[in-house]
Length: 276
Image (cartoon, rainbow, N blue to C red; front, top):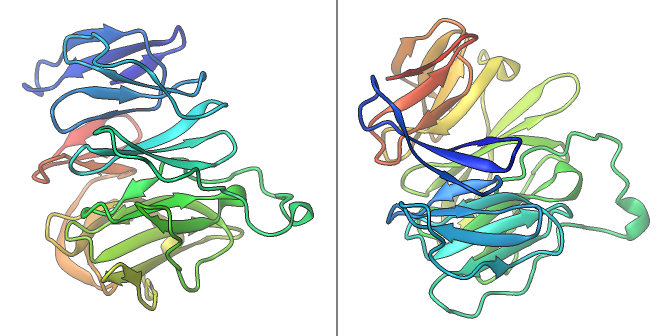
C-alpha cells in the first residue's frame, strides 16, 4: 500500500511481480499494515484506527485510540492485537476481539524538566510485537527504547543506549531482538537474547564488522538469524553476532524487507527495489 498527499492509499497487487496492478484505493492516511486475513488497518491524523476489507469497505466502526495523529502501528502475528504510537510517543495496545486493553503507556521518563531533547531525530515510531505476542518494543521520548508486556507491564532492557533507534527486529523464533542505534559520530547494533519473557545480557556486534556501514536489518530466513545489508552484500547474521556464511552480492544494497511467509526479501539500491 502506498499513500499520496491527497489522503489516498493505493493497494498494489504483486501476485505476479512482473505485472503488478492497482487492486483498490482507500480514502485513508498512513501508517498502515495488513492483518493476517487480508484486511488492512490504517491510522491517521484524527487519532482513529480504521479496518478495511480487501474490497475497500470499512470492516467495522472507526476506533478512537489517540487525541493526536497516529504515527506508528504494528499488528501482532495472530492479528488480534494492534500497537499504536501517537505524536506524544504514547503507546496503546488495542484488542480487535473485544478484550479490555491495557491503559495507555506514557512514552516519557524522568522529571518533566529532564525531558528536553537535544536531538530532533527521535528514531523509529513503529512499535514491534514479539512473534508470541507477549512483548511490545517501542521507541519512547527522545528516541529511547523500551519494552512492555501485552498487558502493559515494563520489561527491562539492560544496557540500552540513550540514542536514536533506527531499526528493531525480532528473530523468527522470538528468542532474539536486534536494535540499531544511531548517534554521533556513528552507530551501534546490539542483540538481546529473550527467554521466558525476559531479556538477557546484550551482545554488541563485534569488529571488524563496521556498524556504521550497515544499511538495513531484517528478520532472517532461519529461526534465530537476521539479515543485514553491509558493504554491497546481504549477509546472514547469527543471534550471537557472528556472520553465518550465507550471503549474496547486491551492489549499493540499502534497506531490505522480508516477505510475510519468510521466503523472499526485497532490497533497495540507489535506483530500484529488487526481489530475491
